Image (cartoon, rainbow, N blue to C red):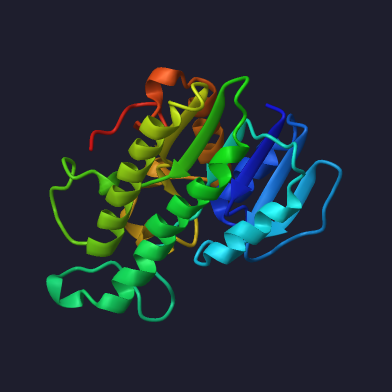
Amino acid sequence: MKNVAIIGSSGAIGNSISKILSRDVETVYNFSRSGVKEDTKKEKNIFIDIEKEESIIDSLKYIPEETKFDLIFVATGFLHNNDDIFPEKSIKDLSEEKLKKVFHINTIGPALIGKHFIPYLAKTNKSVFAFLSAKVGSISDNKIGGWYSYRSSKTALNQIIKNFSIEIKRSNQNAIFVGLQPGTVKSNLSKPFQKNVSSNNMFSPDYSAEKLLKVINNLSSDDSGKFLSWSGEEIQP
């Protein structure tokens, strides 16, 4: 790979993906709304707020016009905050504002990233547009309920990824679109729930990133539109 873009590079997984790829690729473009660092020879750091379409559009001004990406990795996601948003245990916990917030970050933002970044995918060689998703977004795998907003926002994201894969196949046959499940990763997103996960099933960000990049490297055009786990196994809708 020559050029890659990481959306959400300040998060646990995004940061690890960026760090690993910066060893081998020519240029890594890091997009984040927090912790934007100074540029280096190999890393370009650009502010982006995926909750604002104008910010997404503005961030593209810092990419040289001729640049094409071999990989665009969307590592953003939202499950809870330290204030009033937490996975719902009951219908009674649903609220309009909380649903809007979760969907804005997990579904609308990535959809708009796709809208504006897809033209920057390489066309002359294999290129990958990968989005972090979640296994709880699988309807067929849902056996216990709850987590209404997070589950449904990731389900919707998986549908958007599938739509991208169908439409863009007509104009860029080398592009592959996938949703990726990173496993349970030691991060701020999973912090409130880590006590319920055995140490064997708790991944470090670097370990998860290595596994996800292995999956990406092994992708073929037949995988476009799929939702895959960190192990490469397909997760059913």
